[in-house]
Image (cartoon, rainbow, N blue to C red; front, side, top):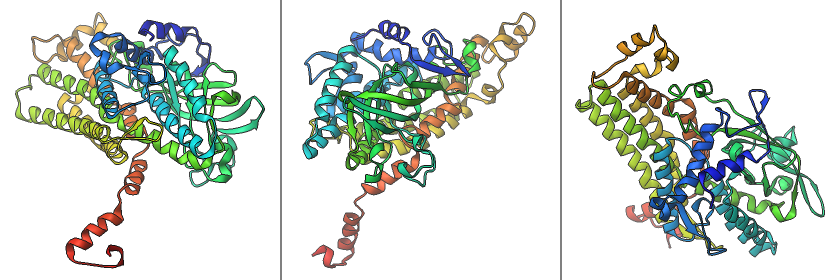
Length: 481
Protein backbone atom coordinates (compact mmCIF):
# COMPACT_ATOMS: atom_id res chain seq x y z
CA UNK A 1 0.00 0.00 0.00
CA UNK A 2 1.10 3.54 -0.74
CA UNK A 3 1.62 6.18 1.92
CA UNK A 4 0.13 9.63 1.37
CA UNK A 5 3.57 10.93 0.43
CA UNK A 6 4.16 8.10 -2.03
CA UNK A 7 0.80 8.89 -3.63
CA UNK A 8 1.78 12.53 -4.10
CA UNK A 9 5.21 11.53 -5.40
CA UNK A 10 3.55 9.24 -7.95
CA UNK A 11 1.50 12.20 -9.25
CA UNK A 12 4.67 14.25 -9.66
CA UNK A 13 6.00 11.55 -11.96
CA UNK A 14 2.92 11.61 -14.20
CA UNK A 15 2.84 13.64 -17.40
CA UNK A 16 -0.80 13.85 -18.38
CA UNK A 17 -2.20 16.71 -20.48
CA UNK A 18 -4.20 18.95 -18.12
CA UNK A 19 -5.39 22.52 -18.73
CA UNK A 20 -6.76 25.15 -16.36
CA UNK A 21 -7.72 28.76 -17.14
CA UNK A 22 -6.31 28.44 -20.66
CA UNK A 23 -2.90 27.18 -19.59
CA UNK A 24 -1.31 23.74 -19.47
CA UNK A 25 -0.58 22.56 -15.93
CA UNK A 26 2.97 21.28 -15.50
CA UNK A 27 3.16 20.63 -11.74
CA UNK A 28 -0.22 19.60 -10.44
CA UNK A 29 0.79 18.63 -6.89
CA UNK A 30 2.30 21.99 -5.99
CA UNK A 31 -0.21 24.13 -7.88
CA UNK A 32 -2.45 25.95 -5.36
CA UNK A 33 -5.52 25.32 -7.52
CA UNK A 34 -4.99 21.57 -7.35
CA UNK A 35 -3.16 21.01 -4.08
CA UNK A 36 -6.26 20.95 -1.82
CA UNK A 37 -7.78 18.14 -3.91
CA UNK A 38 -4.51 16.21 -3.84
CA UNK A 39 -4.37 16.61 -0.05
CA UNK A 40 -7.93 15.34 0.32
CA UNK A 41 -7.36 12.26 -1.85
CA UNK A 42 -4.11 11.63 0.02
CA UNK A 43 -6.16 11.13 3.17
CA UNK A 44 -7.47 7.85 1.68
CA UNK A 45 -3.86 6.66 1.73
CA UNK A 46 -3.02 8.16 5.11
CA UNK A 47 -5.82 6.43 7.01
CA UNK A 48 -4.89 3.06 5.49
CA UNK A 49 -1.48 3.39 7.14
CA UNK A 50 -2.94 4.47 10.51
CA UNK A 51 -3.34 1.59 13.02
CA UNK A 52 -6.43 3.34 14.42
CA UNK A 53 -8.26 2.79 11.12
CA UNK A 54 -6.75 -0.53 10.08
CA UNK A 55 -10.04 -2.43 10.30
CA UNK A 56 -11.95 0.15 8.26
CA UNK A 57 -9.33 1.35 5.80
CA UNK A 58 -7.69 -1.94 4.80
CA UNK A 59 -9.00 -5.28 3.60
CA UNK A 60 -7.77 -8.67 2.41
CA UNK A 61 -7.84 -9.12 -1.36
CA UNK A 62 -10.00 -12.08 -2.37
CA UNK A 63 -7.75 -12.44 -5.43
CA UNK A 64 -4.29 -12.44 -3.84
CA UNK A 65 -4.85 -12.81 -0.09
CA UNK A 66 -2.74 -9.71 0.52
CA UNK A 67 -3.62 -6.71 2.66
CA UNK A 68 -4.82 -3.88 0.42
CA UNK A 69 -6.26 -0.39 0.68
CA UNK A 70 -10.02 -0.82 1.05
CA UNK A 71 -10.58 1.65 -1.80
CA UNK A 72 -9.36 -1.11 -4.16
CA UNK A 73 -11.41 -3.89 -2.53
CA UNK A 74 -14.32 -5.91 -3.93
CA UNK A 75 -16.98 -6.19 -1.20
CA UNK A 76 -17.14 -9.76 0.09
CA UNK A 77 -19.91 -9.40 2.67
CA UNK A 78 -22.55 -7.09 4.10
CA UNK A 79 -19.99 -6.15 6.73
CA UNK A 80 -17.69 -4.91 3.95
CA UNK A 81 -20.51 -2.65 2.73
CA UNK A 82 -21.01 -1.35 6.27
CA UNK A 83 -17.28 -0.73 6.75
CA UNK A 84 -17.28 1.23 3.50
CA UNK A 85 -19.92 3.64 4.84
CA UNK A 86 -18.18 4.03 8.19
CA UNK A 87 -14.82 4.61 6.49
CA UNK A 88 -16.30 7.32 4.28
CA UNK A 89 -17.75 9.11 7.29
CA UNK A 90 -14.44 8.90 9.17
CA UNK A 91 -12.51 10.42 6.25
CA UNK A 92 -15.18 13.10 5.76
CA UNK A 93 -14.70 14.11 9.39
CA UNK A 94 -10.99 14.63 8.68
CA UNK A 95 -11.24 16.46 5.36
CA UNK A 96 -14.54 18.34 5.54
CA UNK A 97 -14.89 17.80 1.80
CA UNK A 98 -14.94 15.22 -1.01
CA UNK A 99 -11.93 12.90 -1.08
CA UNK A 100 -12.70 11.69 -4.62
CA UNK A 101 -11.77 8.03 -4.50
CA UNK A 102 -15.28 6.56 -4.07
CA UNK A 103 -16.31 6.84 -7.73
CA UNK A 104 -13.54 4.55 -8.91
CA UNK A 105 -14.16 2.11 -6.07
CA UNK A 106 -17.82 1.85 -7.07
CA UNK A 107 -16.87 1.45 -10.73
CA UNK A 108 -14.53 -1.44 -9.84
CA UNK A 109 -17.26 -3.26 -7.91
CA UNK A 110 -19.92 -2.70 -10.57
CA UNK A 111 -17.66 -3.82 -13.42
CA UNK A 112 -16.52 -6.87 -11.46
CA UNK A 113 -20.07 -8.18 -11.12
CA UNK A 114 -21.33 -7.30 -14.61
CA UNK A 115 -18.34 -8.80 -16.45
CA UNK A 116 -18.94 -12.06 -14.56
CA UNK A 117 -22.57 -12.20 -15.67
CA UNK A 118 -21.64 -11.28 -19.26
CA UNK A 119 -19.17 -14.15 -19.39
CA UNK A 120 -21.73 -16.56 -17.90
CA UNK A 121 -24.31 -15.70 -20.56
CA UNK A 122 -22.18 -14.90 -23.61
CA UNK A 123 -19.04 -16.97 -23.12
CA UNK A 124 -16.79 -13.88 -23.25
CA UNK A 125 -13.56 -13.46 -21.28
CA UNK A 126 -14.18 -10.00 -19.83
CA UNK A 127 -14.23 -11.07 -16.18
CA UNK A 128 -10.86 -12.81 -16.45
CA UNK A 129 -9.41 -9.65 -18.02
CA UNK A 130 -10.94 -7.48 -15.36
CA UNK A 131 -9.57 -9.58 -12.49
CA UNK A 132 -6.06 -9.18 -13.91
CA UNK A 133 -6.61 -5.44 -14.12
CA UNK A 134 -7.92 -5.39 -10.55
CA UNK A 135 -4.79 -7.16 -9.32
CA UNK A 136 -2.74 -4.42 -10.97
CA UNK A 137 -4.76 -1.73 -9.16
CA UNK A 138 -4.53 -3.51 -5.80
CA UNK A 139 -0.82 -4.35 -6.06
CA UNK A 140 0.10 -0.75 -6.93
CA UNK A 141 -2.59 0.95 -4.77
CA UNK A 142 -3.66 3.11 -7.70
CA UNK A 143 -6.36 5.77 -7.58
CA UNK A 144 -9.02 5.05 -10.20
CA UNK A 145 -11.66 7.55 -11.29
CA UNK A 146 -14.93 6.10 -12.53
CA UNK A 147 -15.95 7.56 -15.90
CA UNK A 148 -19.75 7.44 -16.10
CA UNK A 149 -21.20 10.76 -17.28
CA UNK A 150 -21.07 11.69 -20.98
CA UNK A 151 -21.83 15.23 -22.21
CA UNK A 152 -25.05 13.70 -23.74
CA UNK A 153 -25.89 16.49 -26.21
CA UNK A 154 -29.62 16.37 -27.06
CA UNK A 155 -31.18 14.48 -24.15
CA UNK A 156 -34.13 13.40 -26.31
CA UNK A 157 -31.86 11.48 -28.70
CA UNK A 158 -30.03 8.20 -28.12
CA UNK A 159 -26.25 8.10 -28.61
CA UNK A 160 -26.26 6.99 -32.24
CA UNK A 161 -28.82 9.69 -33.15
CA UNK A 162 -26.75 12.65 -31.95
CA UNK A 163 -25.73 15.27 -34.52
CA UNK A 164 -22.20 14.96 -33.12
CA UNK A 165 -21.34 11.28 -32.47
CA UNK A 166 -18.59 12.24 -30.01
CA UNK A 167 -21.04 13.46 -27.35
CA UNK A 168 -20.96 9.91 -26.00
CA UNK A 169 -17.73 7.91 -25.72
CA UNK A 170 -17.70 5.37 -28.53
CA UNK A 171 -15.56 2.94 -30.51
CA UNK A 172 -14.33 4.34 -33.82
CA UNK A 173 -12.09 1.43 -34.80
CA UNK A 174 -11.75 -2.25 -33.87
CA UNK A 175 -8.30 -3.71 -34.43
CA UNK A 176 -6.63 -7.03 -33.84
CA UNK A 177 -4.83 -5.68 -30.80
CA UNK A 178 -7.55 -3.43 -29.37
CA UNK A 179 -9.99 -0.59 -30.00
CA UNK A 180 -9.76 3.13 -30.67
CA UNK A 181 -12.18 5.38 -28.79
CA UNK A 182 -13.33 8.96 -29.10
CA UNK A 183 -15.56 11.24 -26.99
CA UNK A 184 -15.50 12.72 -23.51
CA UNK A 185 -16.58 12.19 -19.92
CA UNK A 186 -17.81 15.20 -17.93
CA UNK A 187 -17.73 16.21 -14.23
CA UNK A 188 -14.95 13.73 -13.48
CA UNK A 189 -14.30 14.21 -9.77
CA UNK A 190 -10.65 13.69 -8.87
CA UNK A 191 -9.59 12.74 -12.40
CA UNK A 192 -6.78 15.30 -12.45
CA UNK A 193 -5.05 13.57 -9.53
CA UNK A 194 -5.93 9.96 -10.39
CA UNK A 195 -3.74 7.35 -12.03
CA UNK A 196 -6.38 5.53 -14.07
CA UNK A 197 -9.90 6.02 -15.43
CA UNK A 198 -12.44 3.19 -15.75
CA UNK A 199 -14.94 4.11 -18.46
CA UNK A 200 -18.54 2.83 -18.36
CA UNK A 201 -21.60 3.53 -20.54
CA UNK A 202 -23.80 6.28 -19.10
CA UNK A 203 -27.25 5.04 -20.22
CA UNK A 204 -29.03 1.85 -21.19
CA UNK A 205 -28.16 1.16 -24.82
CA UNK A 206 -30.18 -0.23 -27.73
CA UNK A 207 -28.64 -2.51 -30.40
CA UNK A 208 -28.16 0.51 -32.67
CA UNK A 209 -25.88 2.00 -29.98
CA UNK A 210 -23.44 -0.91 -29.97
CA UNK A 211 -20.40 1.31 -30.57
CA UNK A 212 -21.30 3.25 -27.42
CA UNK A 213 -21.71 0.19 -25.16
CA UNK A 214 -18.08 0.19 -24.11
CA UNK A 215 -16.27 -0.31 -20.81
CA UNK A 216 -12.51 -0.04 -20.56
CA UNK A 217 -9.66 1.12 -18.31
CA UNK A 218 -6.81 3.38 -19.33
CA UNK A 219 -3.93 5.23 -17.71
CA UNK A 220 -4.57 8.97 -17.72
CA UNK A 221 -1.11 9.64 -19.20
CA UNK A 222 -2.06 7.77 -22.40
CA UNK A 223 -1.56 9.80 -25.61
CA UNK A 224 -4.79 11.34 -26.86
CA UNK A 225 -6.28 11.97 -23.40
CA UNK A 226 -6.73 15.61 -22.43
CA UNK A 227 -8.30 17.05 -19.26
CA UNK A 228 -9.81 20.50 -18.81
CA UNK A 229 -10.14 21.47 -15.15
CA UNK A 230 -13.38 23.26 -14.20
CA UNK A 231 -13.79 26.61 -12.44
CA UNK A 232 -14.85 26.54 -8.80
CA UNK A 233 -16.49 29.16 -6.63
CA UNK A 234 -13.36 29.52 -4.51
CA UNK A 235 -10.65 29.58 -7.21
CA UNK A 236 -9.21 32.93 -6.16
CA UNK A 237 -9.67 32.10 -2.47
CA UNK A 238 -7.06 29.36 -2.84
CA UNK A 239 -4.46 32.12 -3.04
CA UNK A 240 -5.25 33.12 0.59
CA UNK A 241 -4.91 30.56 3.38
CA UNK A 242 -7.66 31.96 5.59
CA UNK A 243 -10.14 33.06 2.92
CA UNK A 244 -10.63 29.61 1.44
CA UNK A 245 -12.08 28.35 4.72
CA UNK A 246 -11.09 24.72 4.40
CA UNK A 247 -7.47 25.73 4.12
CA UNK A 248 -5.90 22.28 3.55
CA UNK A 249 -8.55 20.27 1.70
CA UNK A 250 -10.53 22.85 -0.26
CA UNK A 251 -14.07 22.33 -1.50
CA UNK A 252 -15.60 19.37 -3.34
CA UNK A 253 -13.32 17.25 -5.53
CA UNK A 254 -11.87 19.15 -8.46
CA UNK A 255 -13.75 18.12 -11.60
CA UNK A 256 -12.45 17.85 -15.14
CA UNK A 257 -13.75 17.22 -18.63
CA UNK A 258 -11.79 14.17 -19.83
CA UNK A 259 -11.47 14.12 -23.61
CA UNK A 260 -10.52 11.06 -25.69
CA UNK A 261 -9.04 11.97 -29.06
CA UNK A 262 -8.71 8.60 -30.84
CA UNK A 263 -7.20 6.82 -27.85
CA UNK A 264 -5.98 3.25 -28.34
CA UNK A 265 -7.11 0.69 -25.73
CA UNK A 266 -5.59 -2.83 -25.86
CA UNK A 267 -8.08 -5.69 -25.66
CA UNK A 268 -6.82 -6.83 -22.26
CA UNK A 269 -8.18 -3.55 -20.83
CA UNK A 270 -11.57 -3.76 -22.58
CA UNK A 271 -14.40 -5.15 -20.43
CA UNK A 272 -17.43 -4.50 -22.66
CA UNK A 273 -17.55 -3.82 -26.37
CA UNK A 274 -20.96 -3.82 -28.02
CA UNK A 275 -22.90 -5.93 -25.49
CA UNK A 276 -25.78 -3.43 -25.29
CA UNK A 277 -27.97 -5.81 -23.28
CA UNK A 278 -25.61 -5.41 -20.31
CA UNK A 279 -25.10 -1.65 -20.50
CA UNK A 280 -28.15 -0.84 -18.38
CA UNK A 281 -27.09 -3.33 -15.73
CA UNK A 282 -23.67 -1.71 -15.44
CA UNK A 283 -25.22 1.77 -15.14
CA UNK A 284 -27.62 0.66 -12.38
CA UNK A 285 -25.02 -1.34 -10.47
CA UNK A 286 -22.65 1.62 -10.42
CA UNK A 287 -25.42 4.07 -9.49
CA UNK A 288 -26.56 1.96 -6.54
CA UNK A 289 -23.04 1.51 -5.19
CA UNK A 290 -22.41 5.23 -5.51
CA UNK A 291 -25.71 6.32 -3.95
CA UNK A 292 -24.96 4.05 -1.00
CA UNK A 293 -22.02 6.31 -0.15
CA UNK A 294 -23.74 9.58 0.52
CA UNK A 295 -24.92 8.90 4.06
CA UNK A 296 -21.26 8.16 4.82
CA UNK A 297 -19.13 10.88 3.24
CA UNK A 298 -21.73 13.66 3.42
CA UNK A 299 -22.42 12.87 7.07
CA UNK A 300 -18.72 13.04 7.87
CA UNK A 301 -18.56 16.43 6.20
CA UNK A 302 -21.73 17.49 8.02
CA UNK A 303 -20.12 16.51 11.33
CA UNK A 304 -17.49 19.15 10.60
CA UNK A 305 -20.13 21.72 9.67
CA UNK A 306 -22.12 21.04 12.85
CA UNK A 307 -18.94 21.51 14.88
CA UNK A 308 -18.24 24.76 13.07
CA UNK A 309 -21.76 26.05 13.78
CA UNK A 310 -21.56 25.06 17.44
CA UNK A 311 -18.21 26.86 17.68
CA UNK A 312 -19.63 29.95 15.98
CA UNK A 313 -22.49 30.00 18.48
CA UNK A 314 -19.88 30.14 21.25
CA UNK A 315 -17.95 32.91 19.51
CA UNK A 316 -21.20 34.85 19.08
CA UNK A 317 -22.19 34.40 22.73
CA UNK A 318 -25.37 32.54 21.72
CA UNK A 319 -24.51 28.94 22.61
CA UNK A 320 -26.99 28.80 25.48
CA UNK A 321 -29.95 30.14 23.49
CA UNK A 322 -32.69 27.50 23.14
CA UNK A 323 -33.30 28.23 19.45
CA UNK A 324 -29.59 27.73 18.73
CA UNK A 325 -29.62 24.36 20.48
CA UNK A 326 -32.77 23.41 18.61
CA UNK A 327 -31.18 24.17 15.23
CA UNK A 328 -28.09 22.15 16.10
CA UNK A 329 -30.32 19.24 17.14
CA UNK A 330 -32.15 19.45 13.81
CA UNK A 331 -28.84 19.35 11.91
CA UNK A 332 -27.77 16.32 13.94
CA UNK A 333 -31.11 14.61 13.33
CA UNK A 334 -30.89 15.13 9.57
CA UNK A 335 -27.28 13.92 9.41
CA UNK A 336 -27.94 10.77 11.42
CA UNK A 337 -31.05 10.04 9.34
CA UNK A 338 -28.86 10.11 6.24
CA UNK A 339 -26.28 7.87 7.89
CA UNK A 340 -28.85 5.28 8.90
CA UNK A 341 -30.03 5.13 5.28
CA UNK A 342 -26.55 4.21 4.09
CA UNK A 343 -26.18 1.65 6.86
CA UNK A 344 -29.59 0.16 6.07
CA UNK A 345 -28.84 -0.36 2.38
CA UNK A 346 -25.54 -1.97 3.41
CA UNK A 347 -26.96 -4.33 6.04
CA UNK A 348 -29.79 -5.28 3.66
CA UNK A 349 -27.45 -5.85 0.72
CA UNK A 350 -27.24 -9.17 -1.09
CA UNK A 351 -24.72 -11.38 -2.83
CA UNK A 352 -24.43 -11.16 -6.61
CA UNK A 353 -23.66 -14.11 -8.91
CA UNK A 354 -20.01 -12.99 -9.05
CA UNK A 355 -19.79 -13.47 -5.29
CA UNK A 356 -19.40 -9.81 -4.32
CA UNK A 357 -22.03 -7.93 -2.33
CA UNK A 358 -24.43 -5.26 -3.52
CA UNK A 359 -26.40 -2.66 -1.51
CA UNK A 360 -30.19 -2.73 -1.30
CA UNK A 361 -31.19 -0.74 -4.38
CA UNK A 362 -34.28 0.98 -2.98
CA UNK A 363 -32.65 2.00 0.28
CA UNK A 364 -29.58 3.33 -1.57
CA UNK A 365 -31.79 5.48 -3.80
CA UNK A 366 -33.81 6.71 -0.80
CA UNK A 367 -30.55 7.73 0.88
CA UNK A 368 -29.36 9.74 -2.11
CA UNK A 369 -32.82 11.28 -2.63
CA UNK A 370 -32.74 12.46 1.00
CA UNK A 371 -29.26 13.92 0.46
CA UNK A 372 -30.66 16.16 -2.29
CA UNK A 373 -32.98 17.70 0.31
CA UNK A 374 -31.42 17.36 3.74
CA UNK A 375 -28.02 18.82 2.84
CA UNK A 376 -29.73 21.98 1.62
CA UNK A 377 -31.70 22.23 4.86
CA UNK A 378 -28.53 21.65 6.88
CA UNK A 379 -26.87 24.44 4.89
CA UNK A 380 -29.84 26.76 5.53
CA UNK A 381 -29.64 26.06 9.25
CA UNK A 382 -25.89 26.72 9.18
CA UNK A 383 -26.47 30.13 7.57
CA UNK A 384 -29.13 30.88 10.17
CA UNK A 385 -26.86 29.88 13.04
CA UNK A 386 -23.73 31.64 11.81
CA UNK A 387 -25.20 34.98 10.89
CA UNK A 388 -25.07 37.15 7.77
CA UNK A 389 -21.48 38.27 8.29
CA UNK A 390 -20.23 34.97 6.76
CA UNK A 391 -21.18 36.47 3.40
CA UNK A 392 -19.76 39.96 3.90
CA UNK A 393 -16.41 39.39 5.61
CA UNK A 394 -13.39 41.43 4.53
CA UNK A 395 -10.47 39.41 3.21
CA UNK A 396 -7.48 37.93 4.98
CA UNK A 397 -5.39 40.72 3.46
CA UNK A 398 -7.61 43.32 5.12
CA UNK A 399 -7.14 41.68 8.50
CA UNK A 400 -3.36 41.75 8.01
CA UNK A 401 -3.28 45.38 6.80
CA UNK A 402 -1.45 47.77 9.18
CA UNK A 403 -4.15 50.46 8.96
CA UNK A 404 -7.49 48.68 8.46
CA UNK A 405 -6.48 45.42 10.16
CA UNK A 406 -7.10 46.75 13.68
CA UNK A 407 -10.50 48.07 12.53
CA UNK A 408 -11.50 44.67 11.16
CA UNK A 409 -10.27 43.02 14.34
CA UNK A 410 -12.26 45.45 16.51
CA UNK A 411 -15.60 45.29 14.72
CA UNK A 412 -15.73 41.60 13.84
CA UNK A 413 -15.09 40.41 17.38
CA UNK A 414 -17.74 38.40 19.16
CA UNK A 415 -17.21 37.20 22.73
CA UNK A 416 -14.20 39.09 24.10
CA UNK A 417 -12.32 35.98 25.25
CA UNK A 418 -12.13 34.56 21.69
CA UNK A 419 -9.71 36.05 19.14
CA UNK A 420 -11.40 37.75 16.20
CA UNK A 421 -9.26 35.69 13.86
CA UNK A 422 -10.81 32.48 15.20
CA UNK A 423 -14.30 33.81 14.54
CA UNK A 424 -13.31 34.81 11.00
CA UNK A 425 -11.67 31.46 10.29
CA UNK A 426 -14.76 29.57 11.45
CA UNK A 427 -17.02 31.84 9.42
CA UNK A 428 -14.96 31.20 6.30
CA UNK A 429 -15.20 27.46 6.89
CA UNK A 430 -18.99 27.63 7.15
CA UNK A 431 -19.16 29.82 4.06
CA UNK A 432 -16.92 27.37 2.18
CA UNK A 433 -18.90 24.29 3.21
CA UNK A 434 -22.29 25.74 2.35
CA UNK A 435 -21.34 27.46 -0.90
CA UNK A 436 -22.67 26.79 -4.36
CA UNK A 437 -20.30 24.06 -5.50
CA UNK A 438 -20.80 21.90 -2.41
CA UNK A 439 -24.57 22.13 -2.77
CA UNK A 440 -24.50 21.32 -6.48
CA UNK A 441 -22.48 18.17 -5.81
CA UNK A 442 -24.97 17.05 -3.16
CA UNK A 443 -27.81 17.54 -5.64
CA UNK A 444 -26.29 16.05 -8.79
CA UNK A 445 -23.50 13.71 -7.65
CA UNK A 446 -24.42 10.04 -8.31
CA UNK A 447 -27.31 11.21 -10.49
CA UNK A 448 -29.77 14.07 -10.36
CA UNK A 449 -32.88 13.64 -8.15
CA UNK A 450 -35.04 12.33 -11.00
CA UNK A 451 -32.65 9.42 -11.52
CA UNK A 452 -33.33 8.15 -8.01
CA UNK A 453 -37.08 8.63 -8.43
CA UNK A 454 -37.03 6.51 -11.59
CA UNK A 455 -35.28 3.72 -9.68
CA UNK A 456 -37.60 4.02 -6.70
CA UNK A 457 -40.68 3.60 -8.90
CA UNK A 458 -39.09 0.71 -10.78
CA UNK A 459 -38.34 -1.14 -7.53
CA UNK A 460 -41.59 -0.21 -5.80
CA UNK A 461 -43.50 -3.46 -6.58
CA UNK A 462 -46.70 -1.45 -7.09
CA UNK A 463 -48.71 -4.47 -8.24
CA UNK A 464 -47.83 -6.30 -5.03
CA UNK A 465 -48.84 -3.26 -2.99
CA UNK A 466 -52.12 -2.98 -4.91
CA UNK A 467 -52.71 -6.64 -4.03
CA UNK A 468 -52.23 -5.83 -0.32
CA UNK A 469 -54.89 -3.12 -0.60
CA UNK A 470 -57.37 -5.30 -2.53
CA UNK A 471 -57.10 -8.05 0.03
CA UNK A 472 -57.54 -5.70 3.00
CA UNK A 473 -60.65 -4.04 1.58
CA UNK A 474 -62.26 -7.26 0.32
CA UNK A 475 -61.76 -6.97 -3.43
CA UNK A 476 -61.09 -10.37 -5.03
CA UNK A 477 -60.25 -10.55 -8.72
CA UNK A 478 -58.44 -12.88 -11.06
CA UNK A 479 -55.03 -11.52 -10.02
CA UNK A 480 -55.66 -12.62 -6.43
CA UNK A 481 -56.96 -16.13 -7.12
